[in-house]
Image (cartoon, rainbow, N blue to C red):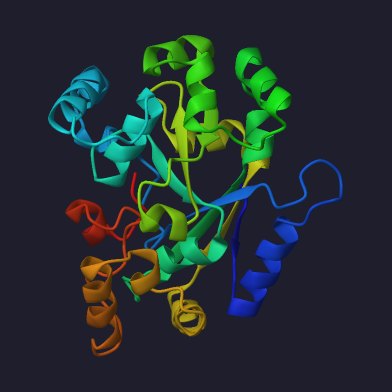
Length: 284
């Protein structure tokens, strides 16, 4: 995957616009989804993998107990609804958070760690879905959809073991839209990705399919300009993390001398899980 270093907001804006340009055939809108990292040294490792050890062995236990103790919640009838709810609230899962909006991803890449280079990553989910196993690709084609809903995904893969069986020894990456659990999901234009093997990480998939992704390195000196543009456009914690937590994050960043140094402001798409809030990456 080629990583391009940008020197200004305008250069990045033009590059993202060109990357997402449609040719008039197929989908009417851009098929790109985005992730932002506030530090270029970070990886796109799932929350489940960050548990270390034999993390794949505890995946089913995490999900079972989350559903048991969160039974009053009603995210939807499928396992994918419950996984989306768990991811939303910081449960370690194999999912990763994405957004259709490059501006939202740039918020999480620039709201913290001003002295470090950030990264904006995009994947063409239409290109990724061309690599899906036939049962999933046929369902997308029949629906004329760009990515799955939780209900669509459940028609082919009722649970994670079913998804893993579809991939066999060649893990695949797929994207689905979470249910509108709250305003945060809606305002962030949220998308979730899942790999068909919990031990297989996004970096490995990117190495095998470099043509499906693009990345832009945002030098620390460019962060301030991008941050100013985002604040002018109201792409802030108050909008992306509605509620008192987001308001407090916005005020902390707004009234801090310079910029937030420790990665605690606006560092996570999930917005409430403390570990993500402090390490300057989108949740997942």
